[in-house]
Length: 496
Image (cartoon, rainbow, N blue to C red):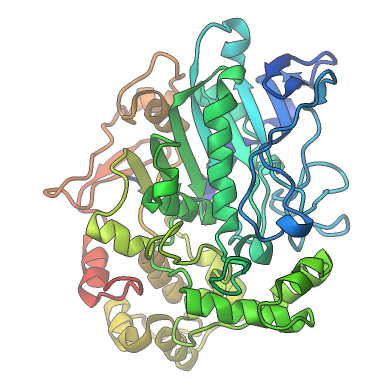
């Protein structure tokens, strides 16, 4: 496990996507892959081959809005599918043609196309497979973040061609339904919206990988799921869901917010009823809801999302939409499942960025925070433990208390992490980040300071590997005092 800085998170994004300026343009004649649906033609790049916009589910529109995904099973033969064009992103705000895409998380096409018809994924094949088509490489499936309301697998920041080359794996990035379209709950009846459709989309994408990735040179028996923020929360859900048990073999969770609880059915239905009212439908009237324009649903989602079910769970405002505890797809709160040992016993890495909460705190509180405001916010964030938390972090008198709130929120919400492609590549190939794979290139900093990634065990609760420039350092008992503090206070909302 490892800690990193915000700048190192940007380096991680660079491993996925940057180098665009130095990349050669795609060659005019792209590679053709034969699939069960027909042939698909992608595009060559200096780093390998790219196949965009591959459908894995029937469009969830009309009567299929708020229904579990259905596997795509149509043939486009004898036509050849164009794999150079991304599929539409799922419906979301902030990604219109006139919006500024500061983080490059919107769809990569010039129109930033989005639609309810959005169940598409993308495959990135490393250069090595173009030179030797007889081998099967491990697969890394990226699940994007965005608080379950934004992002898309085809975003430029998630371009997997460089990640595929650095780890020598086949990289898959996928869409899943977002916000109200993916997680609305109106009741528990057969025709009700029962939520967790976005998670079921992720599961359907993993089923597609099992059935089809061999056509692209991937090994279906070596699948690693990796995600950041809401994507890592998704992986925590998948690790506790029996529905996903046979679909992947190990996981990497970056910035997993275990202590932000998922909504109960009761809380989710309250939010669903707010949506119904905002689009002029009766509570639970699915015929009315399914006929409502998508723009109206999106507007209602934003309006309803401004309210929180529990005023003493202020962090809920950062995760209004997402998986619901339904006893099936999500059996219980993920933090409870991991605390009880009720999760799939697979190799996994969990982690966070050293200043994880800075962006959230400074975006939520746009001006300097007084001591009185800090006290009020601490009470809202940490409930009755607010005074105890303030004593632990003991901020000196200052004109702005946001840095101390950020530090406390970082320690509380997130665990530990690392961003090094070398170790993740080893993990994908061997199941051990320390076990060097001949298929993974070794970056210079690993050669200069080869360290053994420490393994969690009962005797060493807080092992940490800190990747910095120019030297990597192993730190034992990382942040032990703060971890012990949060454990002792039992403030994790989902824990019984």
